[in-house]
Length: 106
Image 1 (tube, rainbow, N blue to C red):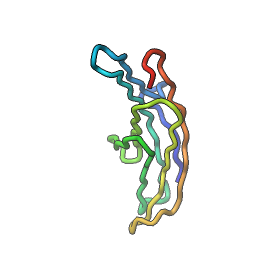
Image 2: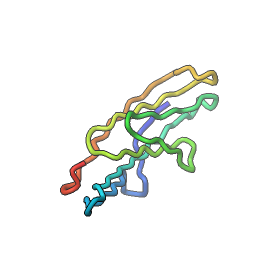
Image 3: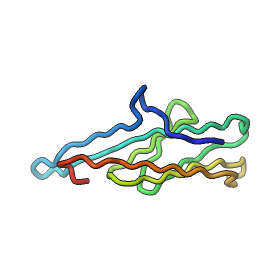
């Protein structure tokens, strides 16, 4: 198994959305990266992606996961290869820095 970051759209590896605080509405911030898992040669196993404080979403491709977070800073992502009974066979760790956006303060 191998895992890596992959483009969300060609040439774009991270998606950032931010809006400043207006009146009583707080500032809003979201960032997303995609993680691709290559399970070639291990079809009986499945992948699980986790990250503290982030939401993991599946994409149309079963081996690509969208990792969404609402803060800037370092993001640690764990990719685990699981057997049919849920036993962890292999673990990859990925790390990405989510940049802050001036004026948002998140």
